[in-house]
Structure formats: C-alpha cells, structure tokens
Length: 76
Image: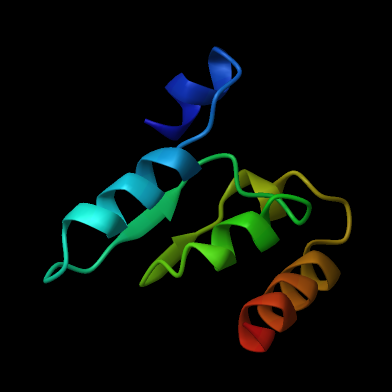
C-alpha cells in the first residue's frame, strides 16, 4: 500500500508506470504519498484516478493546497 511503501522510503509511482505500459484496457488509480511537490510526477503518468489523503489533510491550509492540486491536474 502507499503507507507501506512510504515507510521504506519508496512510492508507487514507478509501479503505476509499469502497469500503464502493460495493461491497456483497464483504468488505473494511484494513492499514497501524493503531495503538492510529488503531484507533477503523478500527473505525467496519466492515471485515471488520483487519490490524495494526507497530502491535503496534513496541511494547515487544506483548501489552498487542494486548489493548487486541482489546478495542476487541470493543466495536464
């Protein structure tokens, strides 16, 4: 899971890239470790669904961070 990978200093972004290359007919989603500074890397992989939890919930200004993330996704 995202938390398991984060605990050992990894993320699931490389796994998503591999899945997108192999699986052509399924939709993909990514969750875990997605923060404002990692979102551009995620967006490049073009997942069908991006799930952000702590990347927003742990921030002081949640609405501002969420708006910035939404803008990054919309620009892709």
